[in-house]
Image 1 (tube, one colour):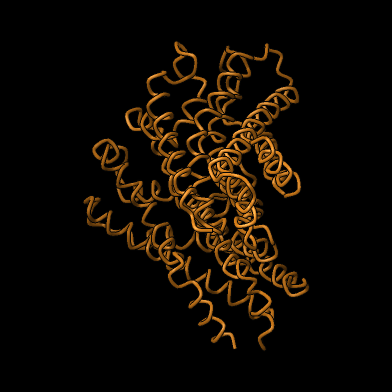
Image 2 (cartoon, rainbow over the protein chains, first blue to last red):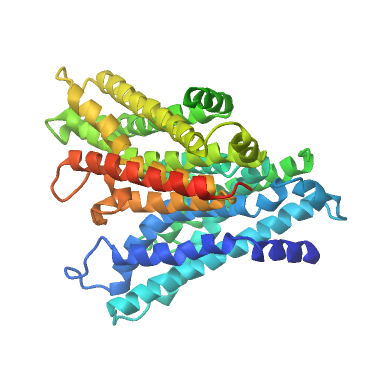
Length: 243
Length: 236
């Protein structure tokens, strides 16, 4: 298992995936400087408004879309010139290859989350925020957004193994992500829609009674349920895939 | 020559889902409004006296996003068709000029998006009539909301085709598309010179026609630059 992960990591280092991850701080800084709200009328911590407006676009559109691209990118080598055949001819099981790819993905997404909040911090520093940095809130939405993305990347990994091209899994991702813009307006529908969960988990204005910004029940059923569905689906598909 | 290339390119995209996606884009934009109006029709109709105008603006709030992402998907698909089977080499070795190969790709994509825009107009009209938005159907506005974003998005099409056709790794054009949609989503705070703002038809003079003119002008320019770069590169 460790050696499969090492080989995935090696392939990752020698591909151009780094530049995909570097778009995260770029978008973070862009969103920070085009912030929609102004602080002048409110008497609350300056970071809150910055976080509210930056998290909005980031979690609604950018995070679900870019993680899908990432999933396709880590399957790129295998799709070229019979890479699946070469990889699976090694003494490895298909299940482990799938899990190794998934583990690499979730680590990369966690790195992206950290980079995003580094961007938030840099924007705040440049703007000269003097209020204390709300560490607890940031941790909650960092980890929350990450957890909510786990089922989405499982589906994207499945789709990326299924299709050779980048465009096809991305098209599916777009079809599922764009409706979120409308769905989050409705409290009733948004709690059931997996693609709305990153936004809800990172929406710092939400309920704070539970550990995250969404209730545990919703987290376990919607995020957990869709995770099991997509992960098992992808896992079983990969077992049967003809290479 | 270009006629044969076009026929070949249209043949290549058969049964690959590109036509379906061109249909799905405008259908999805209207379907979102079906949900929106389905859930809260009475509220939305009370918001304004000009029900048609209000409806079209709602439709238009999704058009630029669908357009930017649609362009990224379609251009990348076009390039992958050649990339996946190393067909660029075979295509270029035919007695055709590289310029016409590039032009043919651009024209195919342009036609797909034209059909999408046309369908957007038809679907908007159809659902608007179904909603009983009034007998005064604003045909001119319908045409504007369907085709102005398309024309204003031509620079994005030219840019994406350029990136997709010279990239070995299709992750690059797709990532550009993701950045583009974030810009398009933040259109109202973008400066006027950013091409991703143009499909939203917003500008400081409040005159959508400027975006259309800029779109055609800059689109042509970017197309020429992309084509020249494509012809100078080695085909791997």
